[in-house]
Image (cartoon, rainbow, N blue to C red):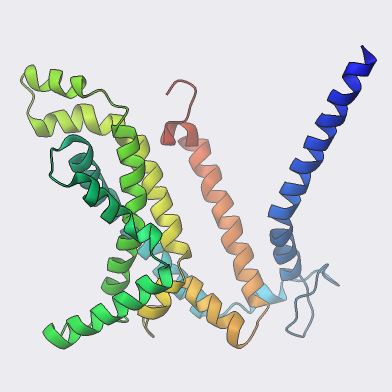
Length: 279
């Protein structure tokens, strides 16, 4: 009996060690960033572990970082909202409509995921310059231009998650509602939409995350007035490293964890995304 238990215990120990190493690999960079942000050194170096704890770099965060953070938050919300509306309509057309060439259309909607984002950014830059030359619409360096490009790169996430849920929704439920006298809009609002909401929420969440963290596309389209937070951070690290970047990154990290905790506490991620046991 002991001879059988020993290999099992050894296997469990190996698995536990692998999982622990995996988590260390994931979280070690975050620990370094957070720890180094509390170093009170006078020189602009990354010191970990910190030689002495201080909030000096937090007090030296440039106001430009907060301005670009506000731009990124607005841009993420706009991209998630627009992608949510357009993604639901596209998913309904692909899953419920009888469109000729639906497979080709689905492939086109997935194209932004397969095209390198730096190519996407350059293509939008050229497109916006052509639009400006032809119609006098200055999209490069504007919030509208950034929003259009971010909706383009985030739309496939909403379409994918919503279409996946729609494939599991029984069409007979919608047919029953229509046969009982409900209009198509009422059927969508009372039957279809509640069923696909987990997919819409998940896609919108992915869209916000992708939009908020995008660098390659935003680098081509950002201007002096509208620059996203990741682009500002990238230029800050590339041109003149400032430990205030570590402090700002720590604030973003804390804010992200706080947002996730609040959603889980008051709404529940399992309920919101439809991943609970009863879904």
